[in-house]
Length: 92
Image (cartoon, rainbow, N blue to C red; front, side, top):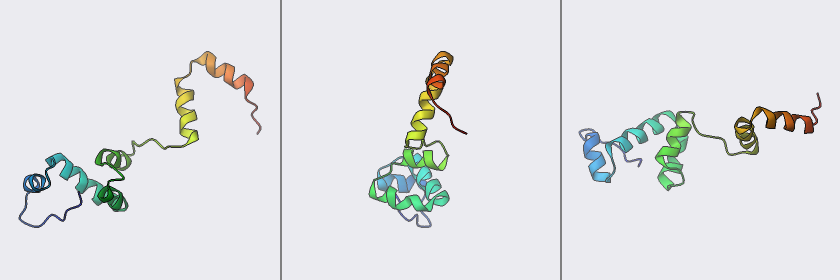
């Protein structure tokens, strides 16, 4: 995905050479321009273009316990939240 775009080649030509869509070429260019640190993960296949775009656009969900708790809290009803708060001891 991180082919060097030589002068004279269009995005359409590069996409045809790499057998990917033009959109993929534009996405890869944007990712590498804004977050060059992601290039090795893209090149190795550890990170997909879509996952990298979510990171670049700030839409990636953090994979940690706090994020899971926030999602669970947001999915609860007011009654469930009230019940939970009565059982959680909050210390200042």
